[in-house]
Amino acid sequence: KFRVRLITKLDEVFAAHRLRDEARLTLSEPDIESEETGQKEAIADVLAILDEKELEDIQSINRALARMELGEYGACEVCGKGIEVERLEAIPWTSVCSKHARTE
Image (cartoon, rainbow, N blue to C red):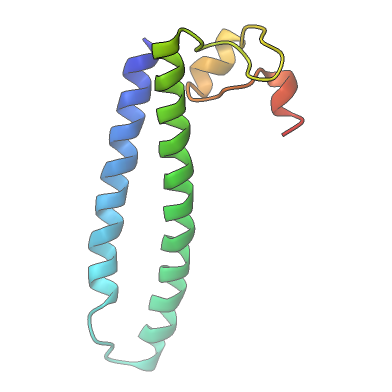
């Protein structure tokens, strides 16, 4: 169940990335007015932040899938205790229990 959710989330992240690539193409079109330049710069800044978040998400998802392969999925990387099912259902790529999530 969690593997399917992780793979689905990974697909969503890649689909969002493709949409942002299309937006970047639009941003590269010549500006008609100077106001457009400022708007495009602001959008480019947001896209850069989203790219960083995407990379973090992809890395977290891949780590969770690797932990599944190793039989370590669902155990907190800090204390080794089981991660709460509710937490895994909300954030299936998490690697820490709620107690240790507060300390990160």
